[in-house]
Length: 124
Image (cartoon, rainbow, N blue to C red; front, side):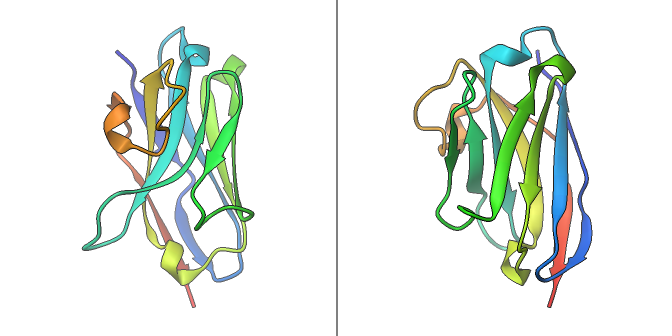
């Protein structure tokens, strides 16, 4: 069982930056692929970024070049650095974990554990 707790959301102006954190419980964090998804009101949950156990990263086109995912296995934490934020980035952001996942990282159904989400609001 893995528990995930997100933090770092908030209100920011367009063009600004935020860094989200997701702290995971358990002793095998390094073996999990970690992903960040987001869900805007009235829309389906969408993939943003993922990082494999080995550290390779994968991004949705909508965030490529603006968002950076990273992980610190010693701290059982995954981060999402979000730069050049746009109003359309406004959503609840969720982190997710999947044991050993190395393919279909953008498919939310591949992930086994989810955090409770953190709200990101970007004003214009």
